[in-house]
Image (tube, rainbow, N blue to C red; front, side, top):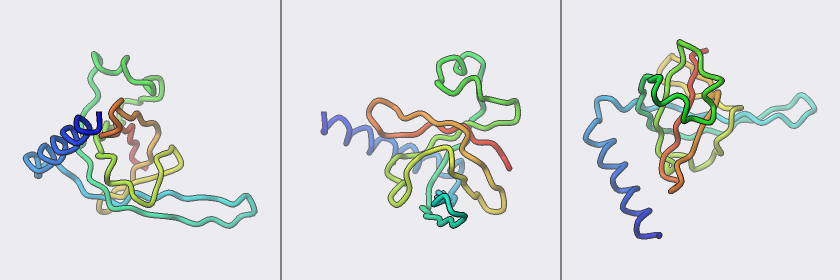
Length: 120
């Protein structure tokens, strides 16, 4: 199973390399609040490919009920998250554009995240 996972990880890297013009690089930020008004943040540099949501695919996503017309689907390799963990208390900056992570799914092989991104 580990060998199959390695093959898929290499395939994602090839795809992100071939479609380099479609790949956006951003800063993934996770903010934690200690409950006493103090917060801290951790960041990772990530890569993401934006894609439109299509009606035929929406019903298959666990976060389908959260999708709004202006939302964007992002595909992000799991290996890009080193310091952060994926949750909905995060945001991603692509240049000057800020997107909140409203929902996410992880494929069964734990290779790529499908993100529900909403421009803030």
